[in-house]
View (cartoon, rainbow, N blue to C red):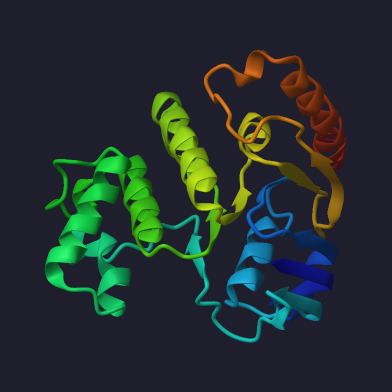
Amino acid sequence: MIEFTNVSKYFERDGKRVLAAKDINLKINQGEFLTVIGPSGCGKSTVLNMCAGLMKPSFGEVKYKKQLVNGINTSVGYMTQKDNLLPWRTVRGNVEIGLEIRGIGKKERERESASFIEMVGLKGFENHYPQELSGGMRRRVSLAKMLVYNPETLLLDEPFGALDAQLRLILQDKLLQIWQETGKTIIFVTHDLDEAVLLGERVAVFSKRPGTIKKVEEVKLPKKRDVYNLRMTDEFRKVHANLWQSLREEFVEEVNAV
């Protein structure tokens, strides 16, 4: 479905070239749930941006369904770290943007948006504006806005980071349910190792900048998962321990360098 081949990305900062991602080689299968974890600034978001067609690699190729990504990839839905909500639109108005672009009629838009607004726990806030919402609520609006568009691939950049622990569990469970029912391909960036193991079929561990893929670990857990009790299982603890060893090395080096 998605393939990165020898991908590197440079940025220009203050007249200097900064290498953000280096020699990324990764294949994501159709219908796979891949989680990505690594230190801050290691290029995780850059990889999502290249998959979405928002930026091009400096070297290498990014392919989607065997075609080079040379522009905006309209087959993906992308939930970035910033909510990007339109301040002059209500919750309902923001969620319905994608449906309006598709030319969906008003009644169907209202029905679809209501379903997804309720799904993310915002029923009763349909007519509120973004500035009237908390940071966590704005993130939930962004999630509903992406899901209602029904893209075949979901790119999520730390979507639940601003949520409280209880709501986070509920939305993790809901996202797994959506994945199981629809077979969508998902790439999910997180800074939370528990979350990476709970959700992913595979976990890609990035090194510190310049980010490269240090390890890809298969998570041998059932596709249908209980996010509330999964942490208690031996397999969860085993995968978690293996991944933490790889991650810990990156953070120890980063701390020692300060």
